[in-house]
Image: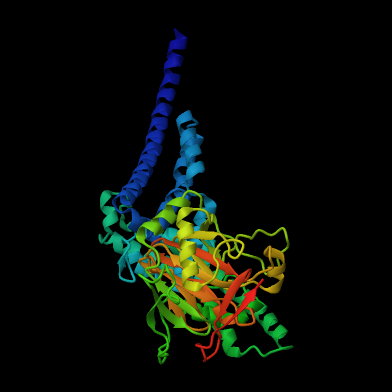
Length: 525
């Protein structure tokens, strides 16, 4: 019978350990349940307001965060102790269909781009209203997450701003003033001790960020001075330019630097001002008008002439209003939405093997639609009627449909090719004489097309199309056609690009001078 007594003693230990295990499992399950409720809440918010939710940068950040860092913190830790087939299936589904680490980095970079370009403060977003649009107040916990993500991506000044807001939010929530999103129990209950510990932890992270920012400034000053010394051979780098660069770096807008940045500093500033709609007041040229055009009674335009708004004569830039119907815009979106890929840029010195490369300067997704697609057949006929330029291959490129989501942009660039690009990249060694840019959607804010060297700002307007000439009378690239797609602040921007080449065209060469009416033409083979 002795073994019974010994077994009972061991059984007592087993029972105690089972109790501890059950408590731990219940705690882990409770965390997993809270996380599942968080995902359900995000899904419900999306169902209630699909377009508004998906176009809201705060919602996009929260969703991506939930399925990346928060997933790793809760689900993965639980799965290590519970390797069941069901959990493995969930993990596999997540890997296949949900955002990953690269997506989280991209969302963080896009968020930083929006804050810098549109000069949005951390407190604006934290309090839930940005540029008059309600985005939903966010919690101290989320503010701290954003600060840490900016810190990790070395947007250090932005990180400091968000750490400050997070500390203020902890104090506010601890006093009983909480966002409405906390009313469902998703936010921590702040006792005085918990609040103070949280504040100390945030302040510790903030101190590390301050040290990093000082280190960045020192390194930047050294590199900037070396850059300035290099300029002495050909031009003087003004002290004011140095100060401007340092200010931009201090604001978290510069993560890299070099000769090109200094040369294009004012272009960058003009680009961002235009994106914000800060266009300098100038005397309006009376020849820049809104008019109708039937292009010498072209059969497609006799009954319904094109509505044309002239924005610039030199270079020639116009907007054609209501050139696409809503149904045509929707058709193009539906044809491409399941096939979109990350857009690529063209290197300045390409080789015959180059098919483009992914660049941070171009954040969008795209797909090509062939010339024989019925909707494209109609669009090409419309383009040719309005412009007299052939718009099917090989005289033009295939229609490119693109989508720009949160923070999506295309930084200042030219559509025309340099000589090395023409020789290597185009079959007929033909350059892009013109661009027709169709807008397939509206956006709530941001996303404008801007020409920073001539202060032209074209807002996104569904059904409209911007048209401009990229080459001058001698078929050389026009510098003032430098243009950009501003970051999308709210909404989802859909466009379609038709790049028209010089090959086999009877080109109407609009003179880039004050005498706009004396047009000439030449045939390019």
